[in-house]
Length: 536
Image 1 (tube, rainbow, N blue to C red):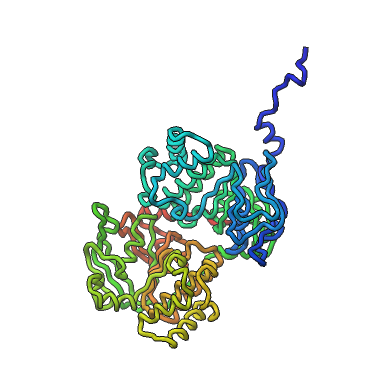
Image 2 (cartoon, rainbow, N blue to C red):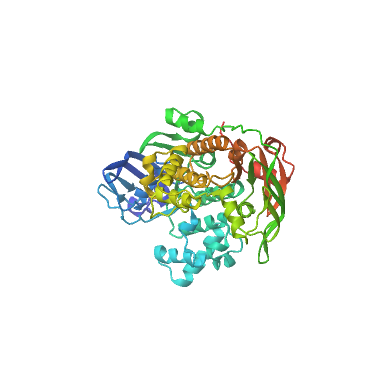
């Protein structure tokens, strides 16, 4: 006798998944900031177990769209039309006229670009993960602690029990990003939004994070929305791509088809922007501007820079390369007197760099300046750009009203408008802010600029534009550059000489072309091999 239909077991969730793999549906999503519409009629779906990449230039609407899905729009933002549907539950995560502070949908987590802005610096990282588990999974304290350790193991942090007790500042950039992934997993999400999670990481660490994300996504069958401006990274991790321009989706499809046979002119332009532009610099003078001899920097028992010797000629562009923690930024700051060397000697021109001599440091600061990776953090958000520039000019002896005229000329020189002077930092894009950072450095009329990951957080086209600006003003002003970066391709396009650092030691110095084609050390070879593969 055959069993009746009533006696049959209900279909398992996996069976339902096989019938309808759709996890998320976004329909006609439209977002406004005041009277300005920034996203218009965006439609897409996300499947179970799929990695969907969203690409486009800065300001294209990538992050805003995902912020809306998560209910994390800024206060002035509103969803004016459309909705986001979690298909398995039928739950709307966003709908027309949703306020900016709408709660996060259950089963959704985010990973941000900068882990330090999301981690509590005064709280042990293990308890930060456990706290998320307490809130989202209703665990007691003991179970939440055990879950946190299990998650730290899942994201492959070495010695998870010891890592549990560390503070954020005790971890490298790659380790902090693993903690951010663990935090996201603590909510047991079905949908993971990763917003530029590898931008600030060096190539080997970037590769390891991408490998980890794919491994976890496959294991948990999560749907992942991966926001990035790095097309090589997208090619390595994504299944499908959405291309956004000016708040609209202009092209979508399989990752290989979109990146190898783009149909839309905008997508074609994005792909063309990845092609390396070689900047041919003026011949260096062969006259040394800066020399370091056996320079070291100790922090207690830790040696950040060890017995470094190098020489930089006037007009030369030198690339300083190495993994995170190799001592690049420390060395760069020592060369211009921002950090005191523990031992060794540094000379700038004919003068020894002496951080304990105020008059010597005043002269050096006029001759050497630093352009930071994050220009926003280097600017006072409460004062206008004009005030920021005039403040620097006053230090050089330029008084008002001449200082105001000089500030306007600096803004024009870096490709901005004189009218931008009265705006505040939060009114500018990342690329514009970096131009302002360059303008502020130029206000001192320097001979030498240290560029510390100055284009790392910018999309490809903006990177190219800023490099072209640096090339132009370098020729005009006869500047000498030290370009610190983890991006070998960018450095190779801009610099004629490379210095490779490993754990604080110089292991290779030479002409860029020679090192890129014939590296002499295993470490340099590893750095070259760890880059995301170029698109065909």
